[in-house]
Image (cartoon, rainbow, N blue to C red; front, side):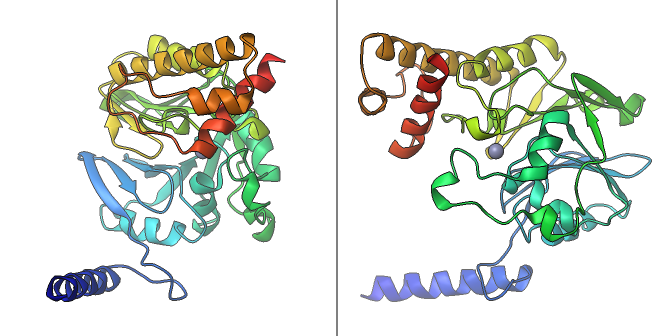
Length: 306
Ligand SMILES: [Zn+2]
């Protein structure tokens, strides 16, 4: 009893200190954006959806991914706490609402750049394979008269700026969606991968938005082979990783596709396949998937094998 009271007081005190630090919206949970400083001019800001990268250069600030609806403002405030330079550009790694929705809260003058397939996907903002069971969310860009929509796109590659300020964008093929951009900061030896490498877990294979369980391993391998001189990879939702981690993740996805292919060839159903599949022992530290996510991924691969 006493322990419960002490614990309750601690939680209450913790909640108080968080709510003082953060802006609350409509009495909902506090909106806390945390900051990981990677370099003097490069930060990863976490919370409220996908990880956001903040790159500060002579001309201004580039932001990669802008989080869930309502999280643009807390992100903007956090950026202001590390620089007084203006924000000039947003790059969205892909179409999902937890990576693009904050766009609508940025000044309308901010340039938005995405892969050309992501630009098409953002016109629709369809519920993903993973979120479809929850229904179709409102299209945040239509609700904001198109504010935050991309005006510039790339197909395979694009370079922005030069020297220390340079940013390279790459597209290596389908994976999480059909528009996953790789955002490289050569001077920092860093790149932002987004949800095609969200962390050490099974990926979200969003077939609705062109994702592929058969292609993702090749796409990840191409990225690891093509982009040189990288020490730090910013994942979609986890900690930073290395190129060795990326190569391991590519193999993990290759193994998964092969396991599912073999099970289907042996006459197993998607349900039987998902029930029997476990994270292989050699992938220590990988998160155990929820049964729903696992079945979704098996089904995506099954559908591709038809
Ligand atoms: Zn995503």
